[in-house]
Length: 82
Image (tube, rainbow, N blue to C red; front, side, top):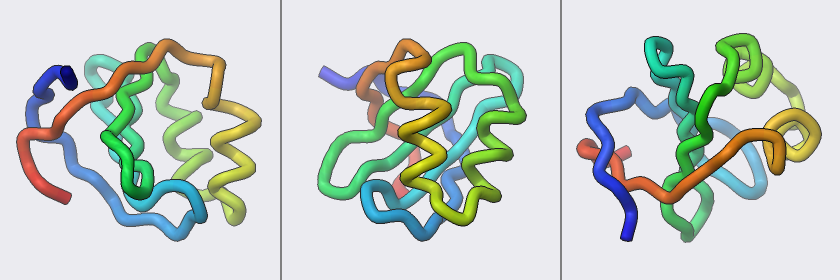
């Protein structure tokens, strides 16, 4: 069961595998809403990784290279819809 999370502002992005990302600065958590899947929360992600993902021209490639399998993650449900 996905753990509920407080409000995180999710920003829509152009990517093949996901549709929105968000970041909680104080707790260094990155949130990614994948297409037709639950939101994943990645723990202890430095802010520059979020900025890099947000600004990457190929977001899927950036995710696969710098985020996927590099941070602990879990399914969550956001308090606010996207």
